[in-house]
Length: 232
Length: 402
Image (cartoon, rainbow over all chains, first blue to last red; front, side):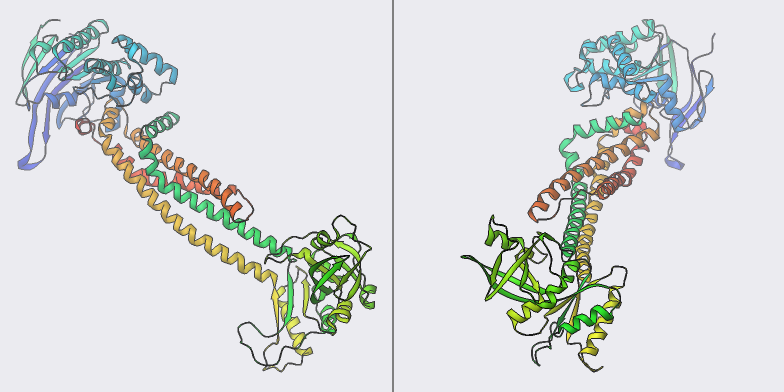
């Protein structure tokens, strides 16, 4: 077996200190291969969001090892984590999190701004990403003028525009009706299969998780079960 | 990256037009007030100085009589005599010109027209001291003076009123009961600093005025022009000592004459202007401080309001320094825009006020530059704290923020 893209070894996360301390993760071991489509499921408080935050380099483990592309990243600084996110990761959120009063294209261009791409390059890559999600005609519309499904596709375009290795989606269909949800899941599946992007997705809904290749069930701060197969 | 940040912050300011404007109002008012006051103050000083220069630069005027505010009583002051003028001219070093002045108000009559004028009996030193010239004809000579000839130089107002298009030089004019030959036309001088019209003056040799108009040998005032290389104070002291001796004043007696210095007058007036400018500038500085606090306040609100945006930016890979820079640049751009508006307002205010107050219009590059720099600096100082707060946000909390 090739080396996994991401490895967690004995990862714990504790909030607070002393008698009030709360242990959100009690020792997670997880390997995620490049090109995988992974769904994370579990009840509230099971540790799935905390795990996603650590995987997304938004948070750090209290203990344990986190290897990304074979490199230990559990101890890196705040700015180094930012640079890692900038270079390798893309985020899609439940609430879309687009900048209001900013056009779809400007939203998509945002990550390129931090990469220091010039104006033309930003425009070209931004339009390409919008085309990829089928919204090139909506480039100059603000989020308020778009439907929820369209907004989420703009958010996906924003995550894609830097060609990340990993796309992290936190309940991407949580705010959408079933028709739009299916469209979003098909888009994610397509990105995973045709572009080889590793997709990590948190979801509550079993029929959304069914799009994934691997389903990881969390319970009480531990990985309860890893299911392989699924629809993919 | 910096240019992009500036463009982004301009976009952000445009999105909140009204709020941005209200935010920088303090800076706008402060900058406008400082620049307007300093500019008008300079204009006033300049105007006062040029008016005083039009009196003749660094002139002393010696007037008989005791100091102001002493109340009446006592005998009238002893007038000066022509010998006092000669004494000053010959015995005091550093005096360029010394001229007696014997003034008389008369009605000038030319053909059937008459006009009320001031006749000033003096010597040709007067023109030198006042830096006044004769544009047509000639000035009177010491021969004219010695002989007390009835010759005169007329100002332009008199020419306008009594001669119209006619050439005045060579004609005769009647001053009261005295007939007088016009030998020259004085250069136009305009209004003096205190409202009198210099051009409504007729100059005659003082002996002629004494003999024909006033009927005595009294000299009302003595004008002394001081060499600018000499200390005016020392010369005043020398004149005072000389006149006390000539007027036989005992050591325990006060002076029975006064010496006025136009330079002193100019300094006093400039001092008053500077004080006023200083006070208003201090008030404006407080306005700038309040304006800065206003900017900080709104930037803090803005950071709270845009917590999610900051979370998004952090999540897609912005590092702390970039978020800090974004908010800092926004505050600086905001404050600088306020400064620019303030400068524009100041320009308009100076234009209209200089018209209304009859002051020369000035545009001082230095104060404009300094005021603009200060407004930008306010952005830096009061934008830093909110920007640092934004940069220190935790991306997870920021994204969850409602």
